[in-house]
Image 1 (cartoon, rainbow, N blue to C red):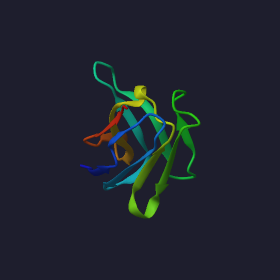
Image 2 (image 1 turned 180 degrees about the horizontal axis):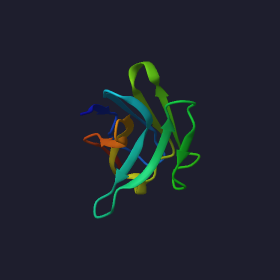
Image 3 (image 1 turned 60 degrees about the vertical axis):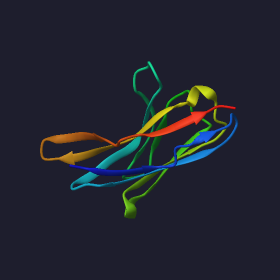
Image 4 (image 1 turned 90 degrees about the horizontal axis):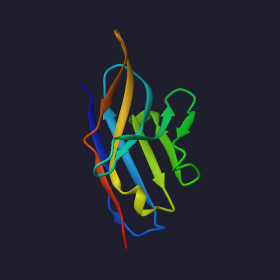
Length: 119
């Protein structure tokens, strides 16, 4: 199993910034870590991810240019710097990790952290 510690969710005004943090304790080598989000009444959607080897990043179109993912390999940590936040960014943000196992890549999910963008 994988243990997650997520933090950073908060209430912020439109145009503001937040930084989400996630560390995980896992056996096995990490392939990618990232973030998904789920707004009330909507399906969970991809936000951003970062490859553990090489650091290549990918972002949803809705957050490109505003959000930035980074990592700390030594801490098994991934961060999401969010700027120019909009009300539509309001959601529970879930940290996720894909790990190489004997049976292939497996995905694990954190418990989520609430981000609310409102004046």
